[in-house]
Length: 286
Length: 283
Image (cartoon, rainbow over all chains, first blue to last red):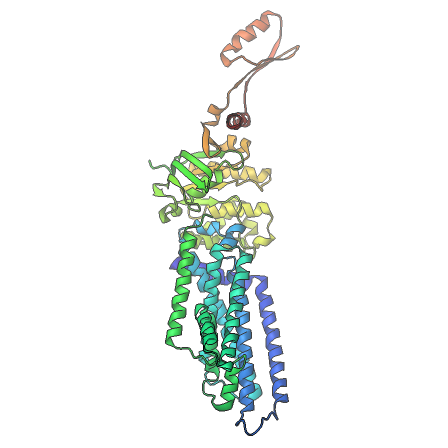
């Protein structure tokens, strides 16, 4: 375990000292600036938002705040995925091809420790990144609307867990695929998760049970999506009536709550992905 | 005494291709062994199996008595890969500090300074790897391989990026290591260098050892050259034992003798003979 901690420390230093990290920070600041500007403009233009009386009472501020927070969640998951992929896409095969891995692997720390260290470092960087950007978006929406989400901590934790799942998947891919192929595959999996989320919204909207089941199965197979959906749901868990229904049907809302079962499955998923990665790494000639 | 490296009937197959076809090799403490062979002969594969980067298909390899690849074996060795890289963002000191922690070395600052001094990089201890020349990176790689005082040093083309001064530095370093009892396996294409420093040489062709022994055993007699007033006379078939008779005969014939030189083939010629014979045999 001490070897894993040494590698994690090394990988953490690598994460923050590579030039591309400064680029990620700059782009994140740009995103937050644009998000703040867009949020302010949206609330300005929806101040007198009304619907027909026969539909029901609409909490326009709640709807817009939830939608903006949902949009923020989506953007954070996307940025966290970019970060996770950037930190891990070449962790094994890519680094071996570049000659970075061999001097480390011949040391007496063991390949599993090396892999674990890389996971700890990448998951930690992503978790801190997600926490900071999530806190910033929540504050921006609160500043513009005066509203807090129904659950503040839970959605952030769900996103952090989702990014850890993506890190584990990218690390697993790095054992078997070249860096470029791994990046492509990981982003395709991320895209598949997003499609599952949209399918779920459509299934809920048209009341298609079978489409909903397919979407749910994909979300479980790619638990970062299920965690993201659970986070979205927790944002507006207390919303009910017409407003709640509108949020849940929208692209940045969800009717699927998480729970201990999902959390356990996500944990088992990460452990399984890392175990397969360790198995593959142990058998790889470098 | 347990050899620092012991390789017995070592095999490695990559699908249908045989990289090593049953190699035996032993390196004692303080012994410097050169591994020679053409590209694709299996030299790097052998070194990689010894340090646990590649799994053998058959046979065995042990480092200081421990199976190659085991934690104990990795604790006992230092390795410089042919193609290696350190992260560009790291400074020389940081690279060594990381490897000290991974190797479990408690040498601290003093060990790092001593190693950088040995490879003539002390002045660049705070320089980032990305700002170093290839030669400087190779010297840093050497320093890295020496962390923790390894008992076996595996060097894969350690001087490929070095200038003549750097090569001389490596030779002197290897001689010091020999005095300290470190076993060294030197994989190099630079035959003159191997001839200068190695106690023994093994020539590998198509995954098999085709010649092995001391450099002086591998080279063979090449005749005698005698410098006379009329010019240099060469006796291609003559041996050392025939020199007195040759000189006597020339003096008798009225020649004035200014010098006698025994000719031997170089290691390069011995290598070309060994590799050529093998390749002709295969053809």
